[in-house]
Amino acid sequence: MAKQNYDELAQNIITNVGGKDNVDKVIHCITRLRFYLNDEKKADTDAIQDLDGVAGAVYNAQLGQYQVVIGQAVEDVYDKVIEQLGDDVVDEEATDAAVEATGGQKSNKPDGFFGMIKYGFQLLIGTITGSMMPIIGLLAASGILKGILTLFTFNLGWINESSATYQIINTIGDSTFYFLPILVGYTAAKQLKSDPIIVAAIAGVLVHPTMVELGEKTSKNFVEFLGVTMNANFFGLPIHIPSYTYSIFPIIFAAWLARPVGNWFKKVLPLSLRSIFQPLFTLFIVSIVVLVVVGPVITLISSGLATFINWIVTLNQAIAGLLIGGLYQVLVIFGLHWMIIPLISNDIAQTGHSVLNGLINFTMIAQGAGALAVWAKTKITNIKSLAFAGALSGFAGVTEPAMYGINLKYGRVFWMANIGGAVGGLIAGLLHVDMFGFTGSWIGFPSFFSKTDPNNIWYFVIAATVTTVVSFIAVYFWGFKDSDVKNAKNAEKKNVFKDAVND
Image (cartoon, rainbow, N blue to C red; front, side, top):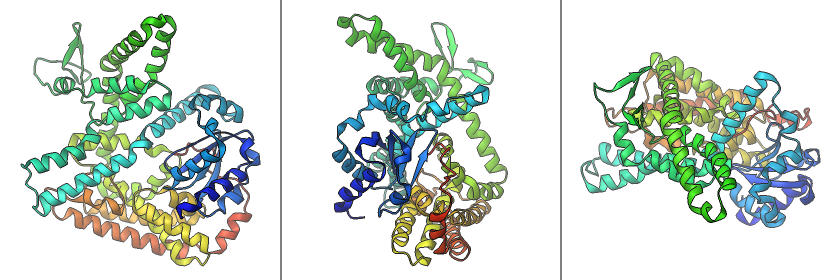
């Protein structure tokens, strides 16, 4: 999609969502424009999905959003949409009013105990998604850099591990992970409408060298409670200080708590004292709550979940690979994969590698290969271009353009591709493939260079090649035909994902 066509694409999207007067607010994530509409029934989904450059469109009733899937060019298209609609639609303070206007939250208020649980879970997923999305590209870039450094150092011998060159490059690659709480704190605060600077400062407390040093202390004289070592004390109260580097849950909670605490002090403090004492009290109170209570509890739960999942993976890596390879992308549909990413980060932080991430990697390759098979088979021009773009994105580690533009739209493509993911995961498990970085799919190959097992990269190549071939063949022969495009347009317009928490 040429950049000079973004003006026309933006104009066509606005027209087909009901025009300027029907748009109350518009935001975007990594792949989608997200409209809050005054009347979602005015949107012409068929017309939008037929536009070149659009991978799909769906109304999400849970969020009250009409979502238009663009792909990696979403920011460019978003800029053009804003140019045509005006700055009023990007006012962050209008978010709550926009949700109320569309009825998205009103029509889905929690009903009963299980309704409350479902609602709370959806809010948690949405918060994690909104907090992580802005930095996923940075995490991926850092993972690639660390993988390439491993290749140059331990496989090719071009860089000495003890040299300053290695230390500098390794620090560049490691900084995103080490200071992840600060990055997530800033984005989570913007997501939750807290003060991003104060929350970033709270995150700075968590990763301060003094806190890191306290967290690393071990002694036989320390008191233990429920298996947790009390390695510090606060006014005589024994507390546990874990390692907060690479963590996200404690600082997300801090971002949530900082808003009501900060707002309360804003109301009660005189205007002349507010600029100094509001951030002072908010920083101190929220930091203490996180350090003394919430941080240790959340870290313990996260570590327990990571240990449990890794126990399952290591118990029988082949079976785990089969199940994860075949079913993981189903989690992506409902946004549940964001609960796994912090576990992977925690795993890499504690052990330096993640078998789980290695198995998940092949599901991305499978979806990209599925879209590639559609590109090879179809004779419909716009489907061919959309499928090829989706395949490239999938092989680069972003599966949404492939999944929402092609694979899920023509459902057999998705499931046939998952067969390839299951086979690839099984082979990866049998070969005990390990992963030493964050970046996945074919572009993430540097993450599979191992310091101790030079064959690990070749095991990855074997499993990735089998995944690609099996997914491609399954989709090409049994997953897609051009008549599916016509059938999809004539089918009842009931999207199975409208009740899912997307992204």
